[in-house]
Length: 155
Ligand SMILES: [Zn+2]
Ligand SMILES: [Zn+2]
Image (cartoon, rainbow, N blue to C red):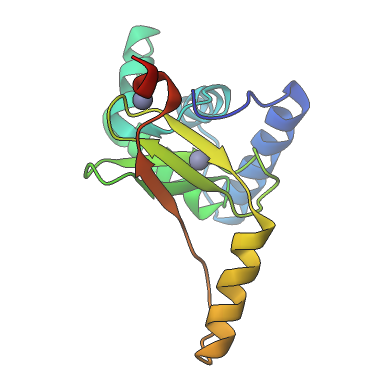
């Protein structure tokens, strides 16, 4: 369980944003790509390309791996998805809708792989202060805290 489920309105809005982005890029509309976008938006987990492709196959959809991959890359370029890496060498894709595009951070359980998402004004401020101190102009940042989740600790 990574994040809250998006509301129907949010999903509709994000789908529209994606379609606009695709049109601006001069790409043709594709129903296969649309189906991948819908699966991604409805899935609340951090999914890898392989994860999403296996969902596609479970649904019996005739969509190739490369279409899934390219769609995830497009979602990232459209700023509707973000690539995340939780230290196991697998690139996963995070939804940007959970916190209205604000920075959010992750607690990653190294035992079961579960992730918890959180925001922190204090962390944001600290990072700005550090950047300022070193005369550094930050573009983006990320934070993952690794350890053991409550369920695993209690097991
Ligand atoms: Zn996340
Ligand atoms: Zn765990």
